[in-house]
Image (tube, rainbow over all chains, first blue to last red; front, side, top):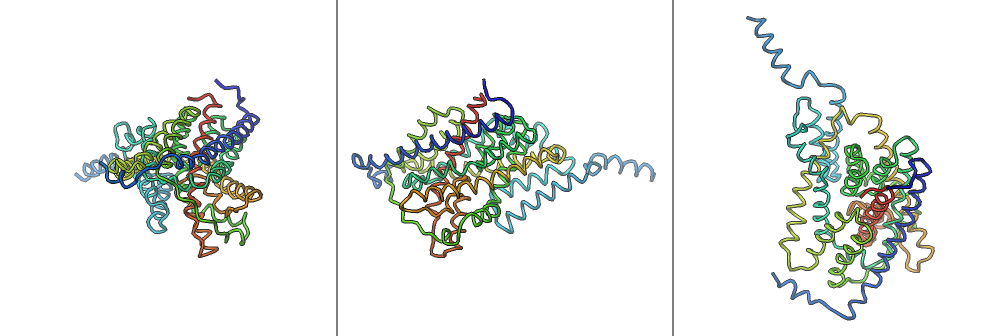
Length: 54
Length: 376
């Protein structure tokens, strides 16, 4: 189901919406990544133990 | 006696494909040989071009039945059409990829969106010259420079265009070292190209393990249409990052990926049959694909320059073009152009940040496109 008309206007509309939304969503991913280092304050993984595993 | 021999030879000749050899076959065979030449002599993406070129040569030899139902290449094509091959490619890519550069410098993910303007320029132009909106979407996604994603989106939007879109996407990805640098040099000054960037912070193992879990959750929640690809990418990545299932990670990123690459390249090359490939539509799609790549390269560089207006620690604008996905080709191109301008500059690690973000940028663009066009 779509309300985007199969016209040049529809192509322009879909492009603008998609391009702007991409920025919004990827910014959200960027914000998550910005907050990710906070986990290092609480937990730490012993890599040597992991590597000596299975 | 002689007449009998002659008619026997005629009958034998009719069994072969020699009678059906046309100029189109010769042209496509030449295209295939050119691809192999570029791969072997110029070393342009041999892992892709050799298989594609070889299959292109073989299927354009009249009489070849490898693409007929039951044929070897036909089976390979079914794997692509059934959307089994693209997710498995992403599983292998995820198992080989270190997302550290992207995690270390989150602001660079914006380049993964900025470099995708080419998708929409190609989409609008495709609609302008007469393709339907769905076809235009499939053509536009070539600009995401992500082969599996291009195949995935095309199968959902315009499966009849799969040969042209997949050939354009993979060919241009392999030719990025030719396409991108002139655009990058045109949009940057010599001073900008020589810019060096500060070393990135180290990324902890915990961050690298949490990353695929978080992204898989986000994508499945917000982008179900493209969830199969990104989920497999993240599965491969977590196999790599947990360090305790090395066998699985090595298989996914090694043997399995090699097998799937063979199948994929054979499938793509075998779609380049002269009769169906040498059409005006193909030329239009190939031209639009080039437009998408050029605009994507340019918009990535310009997005980096725009970001520099607000940043204290400046970005070398050349890494903006790496946001076009196609890991790690685009990052390598950014590094090479920067290194040529300044031999002391090693930007590959920095360029990998936007390059990896570009994969998500293409997925997000493709997912929104599928959602807006009402396709699941």
